[in-house]
Image (cartoon, rainbow, N blue to C red; front, side, top):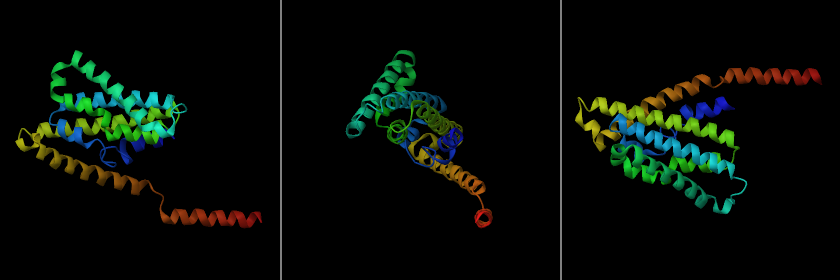
Length: 207
């Protein structure tokens, strides 16, 4: 089960490359690796801590008011990150302030709260949040590093248009590798047929 959660969070059900969630801060801030790392840490903190809190209170929170409760928890964590960034990383805060403050509306975090944290125990929710945060952080940092390097030769890479071009190329490459991986790991139709025949033989012998 843990292996499946890890593979889905980092690869086969990636928040950015597969679900296309959290694209706004990812495209806007990833013009250099420093900002990418800062936003990755901030988003990961909010995702992980809010998942723990929501999973801990899932039996107390009514399903009718779950979304306002999610927003309250995530907003509180986003406020904590904002204050910490203001206190200890002021220069970074000036660069990514607006995107740290609107982490509360990040679709990736809300989606994890709804589909995982509210429906699973604390440890499972924590592990899933760690995997999702790892996958998102790798995408954010990779995109920031690629854009920063490309901007040395192609200045457009550091601009909004470059974000879409580079992100599109990264998405195409990632999904190409992902699809090949999934096709290689799926059982072949012949194998399934052999298993069915073997199962029928076992049943007939038992009769």
